[in-house]
Length: 111
Length: 111
Image (cartoon, rainbow over all chains, first blue to last red; front, side):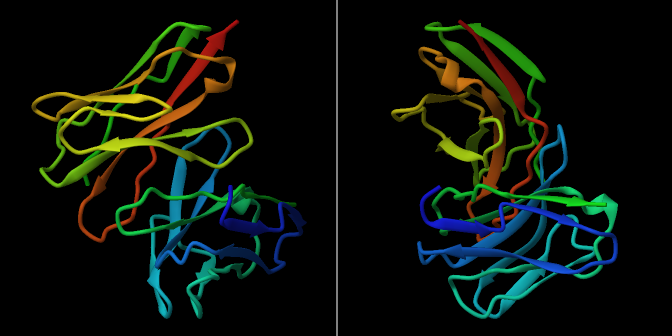
């Protein structure tokens, strides 16, 4: 998916560990969002940002923090990993009327 | 928030058309109808969107009912690469980018 880079692609954590999932875009989109997708389920919105310095909660924000210091980057932080946060995480920048562009995802397992 | 209803699954033969229905009976006048699809182990990708008129692009066609309470995504000649989960989503025209992904329709294409 050109224009959206998510790192790492895979990660295994132990319960209680913290980590940051990175998302970078070069499309100059103001809006960015983070979704999680559990096995066999649709995507659920975690947090989103409508521009640098502005973030808000989505449907399932508990256990996650975000910040938006630049237009390009929108990192997602897991504060204290729990097995229930095992999921695939997608970052999605979008323009005002343009479709969302999803990254390839970060597959996170928490033991 | 307006919701959509899709069948859980559909099957098709290769080279045949696929018609994917979506009901959105509580759609508001400013909601755009978006379709995304998700190939195995990938992030969702944009397929097509429309407001009132039927739309065509290189990937698919979107037929929107006159009362806008339903729509149909049409894949004209299914290929094996079209096997994916297809999501029908309503996106407000306003600056509300919080898309709601349901379970979608899983499309299987038989060779």
